[in-house]
Image (tube, rainbow, N blue to C red; front, side):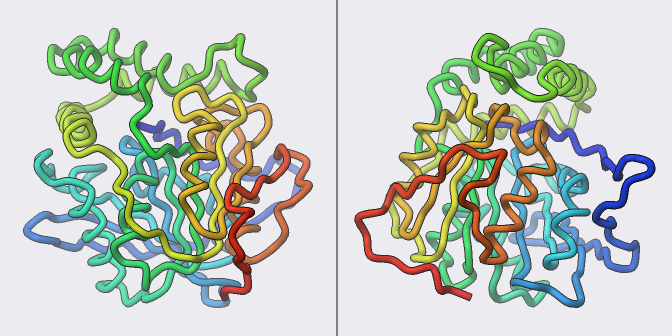
Length: 324
């Protein structure tokens, strides 16, 4: 479950007003070490927040800069925290014997190190795998949860493709691997209209073609980690307001997979964003940022023009959403 690291900062169009990106003085970079592995986090401080800090855990080929395109909408709301966990981004290589519990513990280590005791948690694709395990093992940190492009189990598309793609990467057959990864993550054009489908496919192809040897080594190890350790354990999930969403045409982690995950989470809601697939946070950047921002600041998410109807998979449970 690798997600595109397409992170070009998109300022408002000329002649239009819009949210202002964070000032350089708001941004702090930290180098941390957990169990002997160095890793890096990025904190965009908001001195007058409307809610608790938001931790953004992205896909395995995203890094701590991959959310800069969302910052102009999210940073006015709260402090933002992104991270290259051990084994990802520019952080130290992490052998595959270290699984999800270790990565969840690294998230806890980061939050303790930066003195952040309660957070809103976002996890996209592989970030959901780590985020869910973190929430299950360390629920005292969690205020609200948002997951995107998520599933309880490794999708069959992924497990079928991994051996072939990993062999191609290991042999240095980057063109073959890149084409396979684009097909894995993006919906078939016939599935339905997806915003920026062709442009995102080209950017994704270029990203995979430009991987460094270090990134390829980490990608192969990541695939081994996921297929060895799996992605889900049936542990309790914090009873906090939770939202799962994806693109309506996501063919990797399908909407039904998202519903099934949401059904395991107390006080959960589920929706899909229109005209998007698995790369919804890239294809519909402003809309996905708006949805995340609304949810973590306790605003209504029903009847948004870019979303399909919001569902309540746990509607049979008596939960409230008065958490602050």
